[in-house]
Image (cartoon, rainbow, N blue to C red; front, side):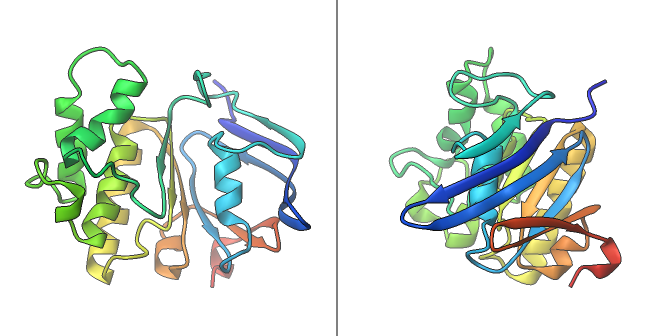
Length: 220
């Protein structure tokens, strides 16, 4: 059995004119990991995640995905929940959630997977609504649900509770953790919320593009 899903070796990402967003990072994501990624705004968290899911490329160092399938554009078997839901305005919620399934050319009807994902985030009654009919928090939860439809082996969520009240945020993180456990998937959550971070097994800290891992008892 592979002991790594994603590996970074000395990965650096620079942006002109002289911004180093990710600075010589080496890491390993293991199957079943529950990782909290923390750091102040501008510390490089989103840049690190973009590299991890194959949406960006490093200037130096190497990234490998030994535990994931190779996709046509980026590594397969990764579900991504962005800070913004990025829903297509002309499609209803169910149609938006079906897109990853259709793009990956999975066989069969995605209807059941879509319904299960919507139920998981508490939006089961809103499948026919357009994005314009959703609140900001509902749209954010829809983005999380979309990341789960293809049952990926790795789920990456960037501030999934950022626009949610405390109770809704706790419920969403609980649902994500339960889903990851049931599906044997790894989960990485970028968060400013110490309570969310405390529910994860591993804790990464970004500062000026550098990544460190801290002990659970040291999480702020």
